[in-house]
Image 1 (spheres, rainbow, N blue to C red):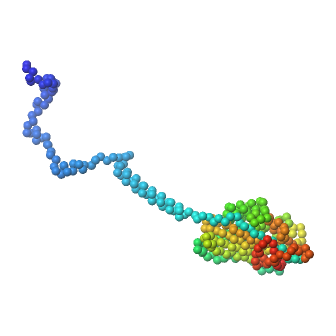
Image 2: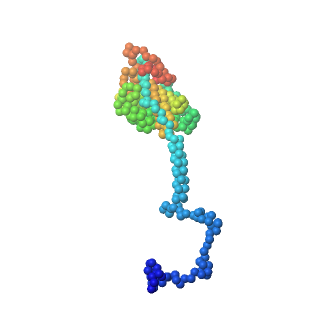
Length: 349
């Protein structure tokens, strides 16, 4: 057999018998038509490059959708942050009023020369300058609750009520008059001044910041008894607004107490004229707190040489003419509060 008809791959190129597996297939016209060859049209060729591509997904969400949601959330976050910061700036309270410790200016009023009251009458107030005055807190006239430039009428009313409550709690409370602590008034003071008054009560000093009698009216129960007689009161509370937009409440009140010696026959009407200068800002009004700038106190009859920082010390008789101290300014405490540290009552209290 000639090797001319054998392929290079060997005789078994096709099927298992060495035959070509496609020998029996005839590629005639019928087979070609059945193949269904398709030539793309012009429209198909035009859109061939615009077929959708597979979408990328993260946790099952298309990336394009996820990107849009994140962008919207970022915009909302920026808007919310700006609104929050703006609200905080708008709601931030103004700086609180800073004054410092209250200044306590005290004046002792000497009794008139030869002053004597005699036996205790049925009505100790009869015959005195305050006999026709109102009793207790009823004698404190509160000014008009009118709005100011930076305070509403309601805020002004709240400030006046706070001041009135403080005055009553420090000057008319029977427990305080008998030597007790001013429990009702202490919470009305700002913390710095509450500490100032607390320190004065613990360790009194005869100066202008640490004398309890510069704040409150009280008598030593070991030597003075406050008689159960209605206290006579006359005074006013007025409001003004300071240039720094803080509220100024001035309380100008005169009190007259009937007191007697413990274990002795002496008694007297004791007159006390106080002028308070309160300052408040809107935050303090809201919190129900007071700041005292100054308290001027004139009280008598009592000696100028006695230490009256812890207790008022009424004088039940006046000095004899030969024992009278040097001449001092004569004042009427029912009309005005003197300055200095010592003056003399112009007449009987």
